[in-house]
Image (cartoon, rainbow, N blue to C red; front, side):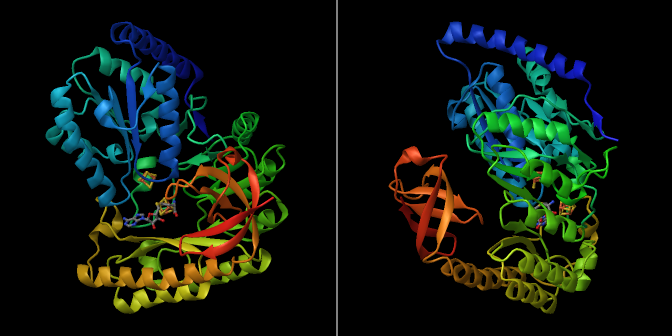
Length: 472
Ligand code: SAH
Ligand code: SF4
Ligand code: F3S
């Protein structure tokens, strides 16, 4: 059974939103400008989507946005806990903010997200970074108006890291980054206990949004001009297991596919243990679902997979990939890989390389294992030294880069459909967009094409992107 945050609680938050708006109009009268907010996101798409909600609430509170903390009256960092380096980046930023706040003590500094859903981190922040004014965890996102109001009007730091035990908050304002593509969370949390992973601890247990809420959100997006939808969840294959109605992820895909105005559907992330024919059937039969799949395998060795508690073998994984390739020719595949999991040997690592060579992913997201306090794997010992792990990591990249380039080479001469994002980040004279298979495609064209679907003939392949020419 899915629990919802009661409507009167959401209404209460709206009343705080108006109170802050009033304070901010007084700010305008005094300063001749709106107060400025700077937000930064660390971590995954789920966090990106949460930041869009934060920005939606802040916009309704009367904030303008700016790109740097130096000019901001309010700074909110939405943090990630998945690896140590994600946390270190936040600590680094907090060090810099301390200096800014010394010269502008009225500036408000807020931290939210996965990192601060952990008590030991909050203790450290209180001790070492006492210039942080507001801390709220992943479960308190919807309470931002109240918490921010208390921060603005009170004298001490405001902290809310309570676990709401799986309740979902609907109808939170949102300010989306893109006018054409949108993340849509279909579920929150994760019930898998991969032994290395902190996500289930900081995001809570799995809970699915009701299909009608998801479809309503997508219909509104379409009415606003959005055409590409990415359905988000830590493990989308579990969608619906906690709902009263009899529905699973493949049913949901079909429902989204049937909506007028939606042109492309993507989803992430699928877990290999639950990925099967029902979903492949839906992918084949739904014409708007892009030929693209992100299916993290993490490690190739069966003993390591068992230690990771992933619940599939290398052979099962490869078999599922073969089935997908057979049913959806030309599908682009991507994956996540962890190098240097405790107990992994050089020989075990060879199995990871073997999976790369046999599957031939279009691209991979590779990570060096990072010990996460409180997870079962944190108790395991390492066999390899740091140096050996880094060497393996570099080998992994070498093997994959060659494969990625080869897969991209096969596009040369082909015509692909591209949804244009806008000007390329690396070359102002080029436009950039994504193919159906999520390839970055750069080409010359007028900026007015942003948001449109165009045909591009691929002329050149790189490891990470394709170049091409617009076809009229
Ligand atoms: N729910 C998704 C993504 C989870 S986090 C999934 O299951 O695929 C994204 C990726 O971070 C994971 O797939 C994993 O490869 C990596 N990751 C998670 N915990 C990690 C850790 N402790 N050290 C290194 N990488 C980790
Ligand atoms: Fe973490 Fe595993 Fe859940 Fe993914 S499925 S979020 S890796 S516990
Ligand atoms: Fe990081 Fe939280 Fe996502 S830990 S990867 S931001 S769910």
